[in-house]
Structure formats: C-alpha cells, structure tokens
Image (cartoon, rainbow, N blue to C red; front, side, top):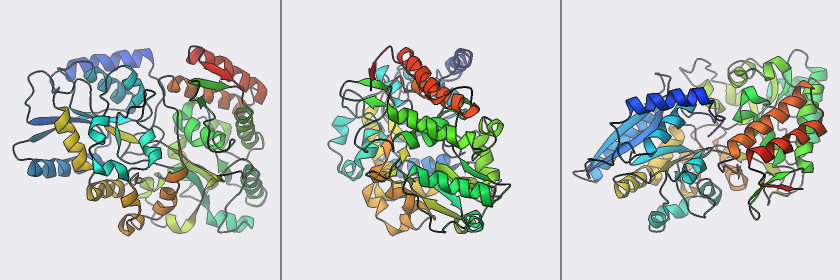
Length: 467
C-alpha cells in the first residue's frame, strides 16, 4: 500500500532489517499465540486481523469494522465476529501477521493484506485462493480489472478482495502558478512541459520549491512508486510493463526507459528544481510536503497521491480547509505525449483468507458484508479511498463526497499496479539506490542504471531479461 504516509492507512515499506524482524517475530510469538481460529476455535466465530493505527486519535478502521460486525451478526444469527487488531508500525505488522499465518493455532480467518507484500505470503503458502468463492459472487463483476489484478498471483489465481485503491497525479499551487504566469487549468502533455513549468517557477517565484519528486532510500517505497514508477510507466505505450516481462517471467534490465527516468530525476535535482537534497533524502519528506510545503504555499508542483487531503482534515494537526480552492490537479503525462497520454500507479489493500483459517466460508461471508455497494461506499468515503467498484464510482454521492475524488477515480481505468512478486521489495530498494545516486550527483545516469542492473540480478536470482 505501500507509500501513503497517512494515519488511516499505512504506507508501503521496504524489507525488514534482520534485527527488527527477529525482534518483531519474538514479540509476535509471545503475544499472539492465543488469538488464532484454527485449533479449538468455535465454528460460529470468525476472527479478523487488521492493522490498527498507532495514532490513538485515528479510529477509521476500528469504527468501520465495528459497524460491519453489528451488521454481520444481525444478518447471520448465532454467528459471532471477533476483531483481532494488530497495533504496530508497518514493518512489525507484516512480520506479526506472517507469524500468525504459519500455524492453525494462531491463524485468523480473515486478514488485511497489503498488495505490496501479498505475493510473498502467497508464495509462502499462507493464503487461500478465492476463485471458488468469487465465481459464485455476483458483486465480483463490479470490480474493475486493474484492481482485480492486484491480488492475482503468477499461478493465475486470485488471493484477495481489494477494498479500495489509490491513484497518483500532479498537485499544483494555483497562487504560485498565477505569480509565474502559468495557467490555472494547467495540464502538461509531456515530461518537458512539466520541467518547463518548474523552471518558470524557479525563475519567477523565488523562495519556493518548484517541484517535488520523491527520491532515494530514506523515502522508501514512496520514492519508487510516487517518483520513479510514475515516470517509468510513461516511457512505453501503456500496454507492457517496463519493470517485469510476464511472458518470460523475468525482470527487465538495460531499458532506455529506465535511463530516461533517471535522467528526469537527475535534471530535477541538478537544476535545483526540487527540494534541497538534504531535505529530499530526509525520511520525513512526505510529512514535510503534506504538512508544511503545500499548506504554506512553498511548493509549486507535487507528484503525489490521492490521499493527501487526509493530512488536512480537522483534527489532523495540519488543518487546511481551503486546500481545494488553492490547489489544482493535473494527470501525469507520458514521456512524449504518446498514448494513452496519462500515467498513474495504484496500490491498496485486500482482504484475504489464510490457508490455515478455521472458518474460511464464514470469512468470505464477512467479505461479502463489507463489500455490499453501500458498505464499500461508506468505507471509501470515510478513508478518503478510491473506489475499485464500478457501481460506487458512478454514484454521485461518492463522486461529490470530497473534492478531487472524481479526478483520481477516473484514473483507475488506466492505472498500473506494481509487479509485486516476491522479489519486488528488493527490486524497489535497488531503484531507490539508483535514484539516490543521480540525486546527489555521486553517479551518472549510465553508472546508476548499470549498478541497478547488477543489483537486479542479485535481487531476482538472475531472473533478468536484457533490453
């Protein structure tokens, strides 16, 4: 997911360090051994594990699931729902969840899985394919194909039901654009148009940052997904994946698109169009952008995600009631304006059933309760999420719930999902290292691309195809 620095839904993280993983596993083993559903579990109780926010003021998921519990127990008399929250930072949540999934004594019946890591759990045999359920569930036809693919493994089977997604585009400050003589309805058609606007801002509006593109290892998956992949996926024709060749099941090395993407990043930081390098490589850069630069009119253009308004809600600490008046939205263009003309990346979370769940049928019944049209819409609106259901997306109540929702929802039809196979976290880290090299100037584009190719071979056990 993930990538989103919000309290309601966690962002994506890179691989755990061995020490953190070991500590988290030990904690999981000592605190979660009694909450499984398999051994000695009641056949009338469905146990559900989810990530609970570490911010005690954020109760979006807790409130929603409490409502679903009431609905489910009313709809299925005699059945009970036991909520098993895991209150932990992202990396610990993933580790604790995997520890629970290993044994029928600790496996819940339903788990909240990030699309970033779901394929790792699939490969480990922790999750149950859902195709037999989905084929009999009419509502599955309402889900858009791009969202369905996010939880589909290399074996062609589907292992999770998405509960929404996110998309990405260009946010821009209308006041800064006016001072720079740029249009209020700005919509760049090419990468050069984006850079030209940033250069104009640098020249005509001093003391602001022209553009932010997340970069480097400190930003983690945000650098890979919001930054690099939003560029890379605009270098092809929109029909093939520039990172992974599905036909050969190999990762792609040596592509011109990869070098062109690094060149864009290099240009942003060499020409001082982006934040100071020290700020760009600060682990808190996402909070800085959403909580300081944008609300205080210090950033002209932000390549960022649909979830940003969550940072500006009442009680968030960065309240900004006029954001929709002061910010404009534009889609990210393809490199040269080639079809389809626009680019977006999507992540998100899914509900999945563990292989060792004691009550899988009851778990899928709970999914169906959560995913009625009305309940799905309720969740999207509460969580500032983007609908992956066609019927909800077409509902005016959803489309008008928050400024910008329609813009970001319309991107779902042409969005891309990462090739989140088991090797992806290591591939993502290699991308971040290449970005950091050209951001600091320590590496040329060619050297950074070559280093990435070498790292890619190591990260994927040499499952690489050369372009």
